[in-house]
Length: 90
Image 1 (cartoon, helix red, strand yellow):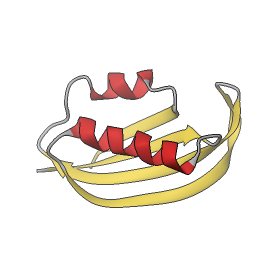
Image 2 (cartoon, rainbow, N blue to C red; image 1 turned 90 degrees about the horizontal axis):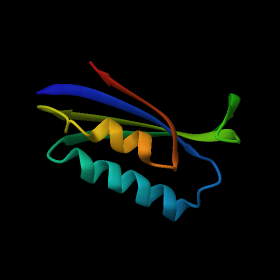
Image 3 (cartoon, rainbow, N blue to C red; image 1 turned 90 degrees about the vertical axis):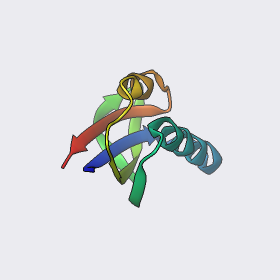
Image 4 (tube, one colour; image 1 turned 45 degrees about the horizontal axis):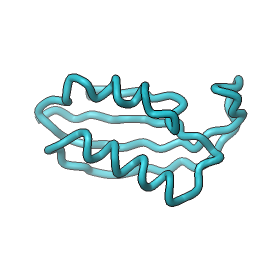
């Protein structure tokens, strides 16, 4: 098993229901992984505007799994609610 950490910057203008829906779709796209913890860091100002947003909602997901689907990062890039992402293998 490999340990991963996914850090997301979501649009701050999203409602709570839309944030939850986005995170749930990401978890579903990962498939069979074991989530360890979700660390919600809250809304913070960005150093520079991204897609005309001046602040973002930061979230870190830690999980264990064998491998990540090959199109997972492509799905993150194509999701309009996600401003930036960082996927780390620990």
